[in-house]
Length: 95
Image (cartoon, rainbow, N blue to C red):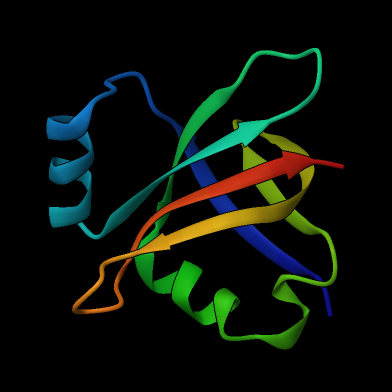
C-alpha cells in the first residue's frame, strides 16, 4: 500500500515561522535532491503521524502531492521533541 501525503510550499523560513506552523498542527519539512534546489514544504501533522506509524514508511517510497505534481521521496531524517516525542521536522530525498 503506497503512502501519499499532501504538502504546501513554504515561503517563510526560520525558527519563528516553524514554531507558528507547529502551533497550527503543520510540520515543516524539506525535499532534497543532488543537483537540484532544496524545496521547503509543510505537512499536516496528523496525517504524517499516521503515515510514520506504518512499517513501509521508511522502506518504500512515499508520494508527496505538491502543487498538483507527485514527487516520489524517501524519508531520510525525522527530528522529534526530546520530551514529548512530537515530530518537529522531516527531511525527504527524491528518488
